[in-house]
Image 1 (cartoon, rainbow, N blue to C red):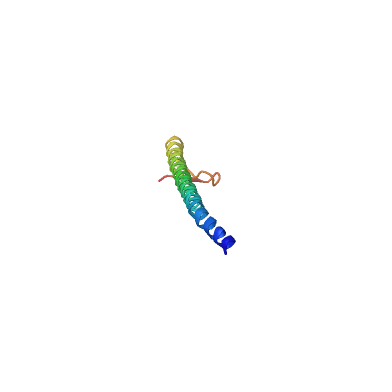
Image 2 (image 1 turned 45 degrees about the vertical axis):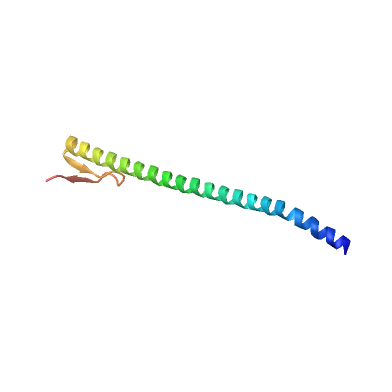
Length: 89
């Protein structure tokens, strides 16, 4: 009984430390996961924003090019399609 009692006491003495350690570890892991998730979300948002900005810029440039070509040649030249020339009425 004494040996069992000693083991029991040692377990009781060790348990709070283990509990604290496990709690701290769990909190740390959760925080790391949260931080990584936030970083990932921010990265995705940033990438989407960049793609949107680039798309808008590309569309604006295409429109500007079409307008310039229309003013220069008096015809609408479709970009990226080929030498399709549509006369302007």
